[in-house]
Image 1 (cartoon, rainbow, N blue to C red):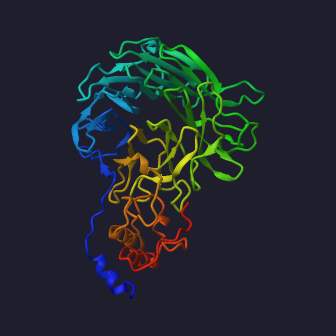
Image 2: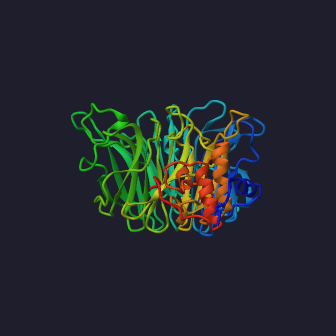
Image 3: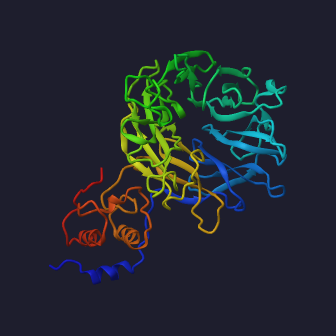
Length: 498
């Protein structure tokens, strides 16, 4: 019997075949705030699949940068917000960090300055209920520092346990000191502002449901060259220290800080993040360079509850990052493993060019599950900064938000989000170009749009559409797949797809 001809193929492609997406695809978050640049977005999820997004936009009357929060249900329908959670009298320097309890209580944090004076900057926090109504007023976390007029307290992270006790960490930009403070479910301080490091670059925080929390700090150890080392300081639910551990040591790959090879260190803590499991195990991710790649890359390592390495140092990115601005973030996946998000310029022809946002999943031992998964559908649409994205996971789905620049008619940025089935992150079926776990004519249409219109595939690696095994995607693959779908051709041949 004759195979499907090219003429028949073109007739087939005229038929509209909708794709059955298995995730909530890219959608615009700041529908109410399109004027001016948006930024500082983060995301959190409760125990019912409802997800909450914070972002910064221009105030309607003063054009000041203020903070907003929105709530969506598990189907992606907006159910509350946008609620303005910072006043027009205060300017958002950074923040929007969010932590959400299983019941839907949430805490949002911001680094705020008086508007339009812009000094001093202090960390602020507020607890809201699941309907985004205030449980506490917006409050200063650091009243002990009122006497410092030039104070510059940059809020870094926040986390909450199952009892709605939450911990906030910030950094003094002038002195590079890190402080944390713990609060109960009513916002009452459980301790004073506690200095935890005399030198740190980016302190980050991980909080488990049972109350344990970990501070990841790049503290200076006074060696002959005053090397900075990443430290993990772990505390129990009462705030008692139970571990103080150097996380990255010289027993693994050689990693250079800031890609400089003239220093006597094999590690770096630039732009790190940390995630803590219930059993005390943790993953630390950070940026650095090795001997084999001239770009700043994200790396990670897993440790047990005693601070012993469970894995060697591993590289997160599967392709060259093509950038020297890279800050990975990590969360637990709800199943004992971890999810890492990274932003790089691997598809840009320019160094530090337009970015994309990727996910990489790991098991509890630090073994990769699948490969890097590109989140944003429009290639190169993710903002060129390294910090404006966030992820959350509830054990079933992954929730992602990022600052996006896909609108070609404006220089302003928007906020986009996506919800993905956890089991499908980084896992691909050969020929499944639309990523719905089926082989249908929808996949053919996606492949044709990629070939003739330059539209990217939604899975992050175009070689998933290489079904004849020649390590490229062309019209030959389209014809090959059509023949297979109609039972007229051989099965797919694996090529260069990992």
